[in-house]
Length: 393
Image (cartoon, rainbow, N blue to C red):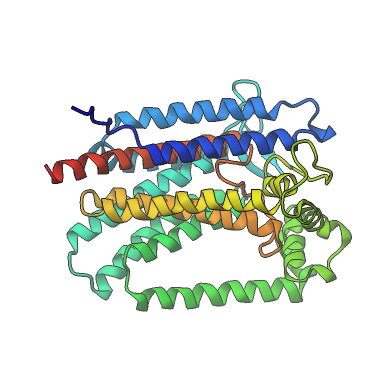
């Protein structure tokens, strides 16, 4: 008799996780050749972050869907509390980076925590529960019930967004709003409401962009000195030819690196273009320069396979545990916006921000939070395997 494979062995996810980890370490190793990183062993640190993230991922395997469902509100509240504590903490506890107080100081040397990365997951988890409960209560959707659900989702999301904007961290706040927008669609809210919402938000953002482009000096005056660089990045994105040399510098570096990689790249240790924050924000440029078009395409393929897994798992899980299905779609939204923004800014279709490339960019909080999310997805995949097996017995 053939021994049955354990429910906890999800081969496809395991292979994807290993491929992401190996790709990340190789890319960071190549980024570390620049002199600015001579005193930092980012590869070893990234191994530590992945190891801690794996511990998180393994730990959540001991939770079942019912425990996550019941505990989501408390997990969400803990995340909000962490953001509040961060905001009111003195600089000795929470320090500023580029004018934003987003990090708790290192309790252990070299280990700092950015709560907003973990709160993304807690918000998605609670949003999933809110949608699931609403669908159970209102089996028949109406404009009134959909409006109620929309207001609940907006309320849940705007609370962490407001606290993050106070830091201030505009880029991270936009990630939350994108996740909200995607989950509104996945929740099946009436298209009449969605189109109205898109019209309102689109009009506001278009007006804001036009104001910044037409009156940059006034926009900088309103935003304050600490936000001038963000205005410059928007202006550079909108019209690179009219921007200053310093504002164009990030784009020029990214273009130069990606273009010089050509088809197959320059190989390990062959990177010649200096990047700011090469191991984090511009890691895709390093990959493109090192391994060329083939290497960049391989990374995009990895993300496609991950997103495909999230879509299929979310669709299949809906008939068993609907809130787990919504979490898959929420995590999909998180990965999608990070990948689109990070890769987009290196090729000039999006403005430069500090949003990392998930599972590849160096970073403690980002890596650990994403691995925790992957762990939750893994647990959902295990649950689906169990439920599907029982269904056909």
